[in-house]
Length: 527
Ligand code: G4P
Image (cartoon, rainbow, N blue to C red; front, side):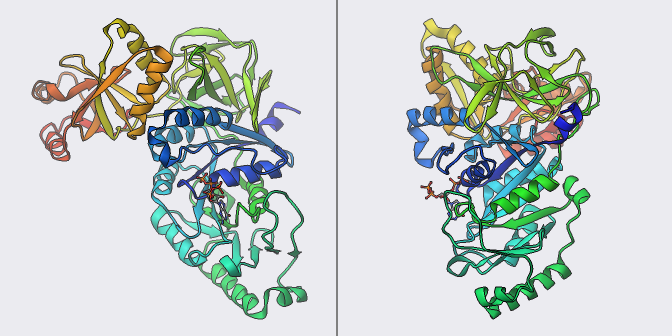
C-alpha cells in the first residue's frame, strides 16, 4: 500500500465523556467490532474511582492499566483506527486536554438519563475552540431517560453545538424497541440479549415493510414517522464539510452495554470521520502528506516499576513516516536521536514497529530526554503549537523533608513536571517552589511517586493563590517596571522561565489588570 493510501485509511480519535457515561464500555464494544478482542470485559476500566483518593496502590494499579489502554488500535473495514484514551476523572483533565491535541476527531458520550454533565461541558468547550469534528453518542437507551428531543436541545444549548440527528430511538427504557437509522434509512430492533458478542439483529430495510408495524405497534410507528418529519423540518441535514469544520455535530443513539447502535456508530464514523489533519507549527502548517517526518510528544507515561525509571513518550506522527533506527532531530535539544524499539499499540499489547504513518501514535522509551510538547522532525526546525498549560486550580509550597535527598527531590520534581503531572512555579523573591495542580489528587500522587521512584520525601504547605496568569509586557514600559516592583511578592517563573503572576484573589487580579493596563494577563501559557 502506498504512502498516501496509508494516510487516508487512518482515523485517530478520542472518546470524551463525564465519568460513568459509558466511555469504557463503548471503547470495548468498538474493539469487539474491530475484532481486536473476542469478548467484552477484556479491556479494564482505566478510570480512577472516586474512592481511590487516598489509596496509592489503587492509583498505581490504575496507572498501569492506563498505559495499556493509552492507545487502542484496530482495523475495521479497510481503515486503521486509533482510539486515544482520555481520563474521565476531573483531576486528570489536563491529561485529557493534551491528548485532545493529538486527535483528529472525537466522539462525545452522553448518558440518556443524566444528559449533559459538567466534565462533558469542559471537554467539549476545548474541542469547540479547536474546531475538532465531533460526533455525539447518546448512551444507555435501555434505561429510562430524557426525551430524545429534549436531549438534542440540551446538547445544543449547554454544549453550544449545532446538531443533526443521524438516528432516532423508538421508545426508551422498558419500552425501548429499537432505532431508526437516519444515516442508512433502516430500522434495527432491540432485543437486549447480545451484551458480550456481536450477532445479527432483527432489521427492517424501510419503514414501509408491513411487518414492522406488527412488531413495534402502530402507535410507535406513527410517533416515529411524526418525529422524523419534525427532524426534517427542524434540524439541518448532515453536511460533511460542516462536520469537518466543527460546525455541525451528528448525533446517534444506542446502548453500549447492549451492543446496540454501536456498529451503526462505527459504520458512520469510518465513513465521515477525517483522515489525519494538517497541524500548525510556529513556523508553518504541516501537511500529513509531506515526505519528511514530523511529530510531537503529547503524553509521557512513567514506568510503574520504581527500579526501572524509564518512561514511555507518546508521539503523534504528523507528517512523513517514522522509521525505526532512523535519526530524527529533537528540536528543543537540537540533537539527533535514533530509536531502536519504537512501539505501536494494539488493543492490549504493544509491539515494535518499523514504520509508522501520519495519524499513528508511536511509543518511545525515554530516560528523561522528552517533555510534553517536544517536536521531533526529519531535520527541520519546527515547533508544534497547541499544548498550553492552563492555570492550575490548587497551589501548595513543596518542601524538602530530607536534607540528604535534595538532589533526588529536585530531579523527581523536574521529571514529574516534564510528564505533565503538575506545574512548577519558582517564586522570584526567594526561590521557593510551588506546585500547581488541577485536582487535589495529584498532590498525593506526586508525594507518593517522589518517595517510591526517587527516594525523596516532601511535605506541602498551604498557599493562597486564586489564579496563575502568564504576563506579556514590554520590558521597557514604566507600567511594567512598577508592576514588578509592587507585585514582587506574587511573581514567579514557570518551568520554561516565563513570568507568572500568582493572584491571591479575583479582586486583586482585577485590580492589577486595571492598574497595569499596559500588560496582558494570559490564562494559558501559550499566547
Ligand atoms: P466511563 O468509562 O464513561 O466512566 O463509564 P463505563 O463504561 O465504565 O460505564 C459506567 C457504567 O455504566 C457501568 O456500570 C456500565 O456497565 C454502565 N453502562 C455503560 N453503557 C451502558 C448502557 O448502554 N446501558 C446501561 N444500562 N448501562 C451502561 P457500573 O455498574 O458502574 O460498572 P460495571 O460494574 O457494570 O462495570
